[in-house]
Image (cartoon, rainbow, N blue to C red; front, side):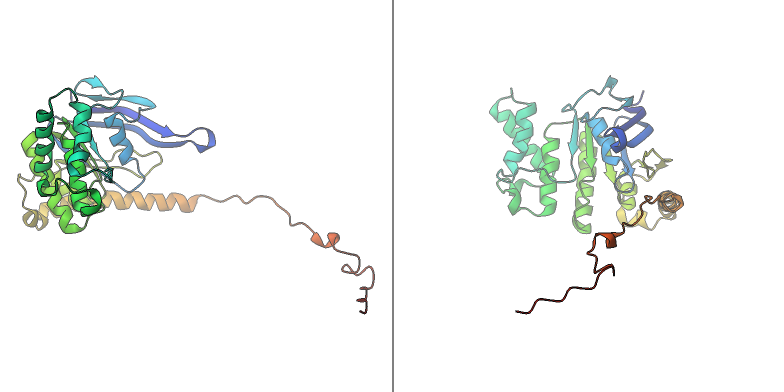
Length: 298
């Protein structure tokens, strides 16, 4: 039995004519300690899969199982880092992390909670900014603050929902390496959602693309067998890496081509409406039935 299982999962939102089927027959099995990247276009349901694993939503059909137990709600053993920072602007780095620590470890002593907060902040190299508020931090520092808050709960599963998409390339690569170091240190199971092919191939053990829906499902996985720790420059020039990259990009381009073909094949039915004859509402002189009246002299 895999550590994380999505078995025949389908889910949609809305009702009636506004109903939208998002995912259909999704089957995903992730082993304990594995790093898996879900990759696809925006709006394909990647974040919905993360919400299902986190327990924020329930599937319409199928089941989600983590560590042998059916997921029926959120739990601190599954930590989710959102795409936006979700930091409270009036709290500093320390207090934003303390929110999670106080919720999960509220019965611990103040000294124990303080230790957890400082350790989580140190793991993302943010200790010098401990007393700074979000408005005083760069985008990368804010994202590290959000990661530290999740790490402070000591989750077995770390769910990363496009946490680096808003960052510049250099900052993004630095935080990628920090996440990999944390993963190695804590031996967590990580699921990363990304729309960056290179990010997925560099960080993950497996990259699984998602088809364009609706409803969407999973494509064929790509296993990334490069040794760890990985040298970014070395693998980018490796022929095997280039081949894996072409396979993933090829799947995504095929999906986009199918979407365009389906859109162009759909005919648009125009309503059967006849224009209204507004001339009959005009005065008789306008319709030529009477002479136009002369303007009265002042």
